[in-house]
Image (tube, rainbow, N blue to C red; front, side, top):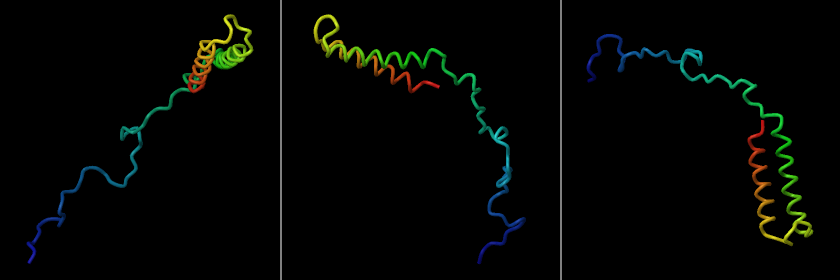
Length: 96
């Protein structure tokens, strides 16, 4: 036979937290303010610099193989061109 309960018959005491009720995000601590739009913009020169770096890197590789650059065909012109293109791609990922 089960022991008799006295009181409300609850197995656990009632929680002080309201379950199922709406609480605004500001009050619950889960609210993050949006970043202002003026902070998200890149400088005006940033986009043209990316394009210039990509074109310059391609030109350096192309002119290396056409033997226009001094010192005949060199691996260093190829590496420099690829590094410039890679840097431009990395910059493009941060463009807003």
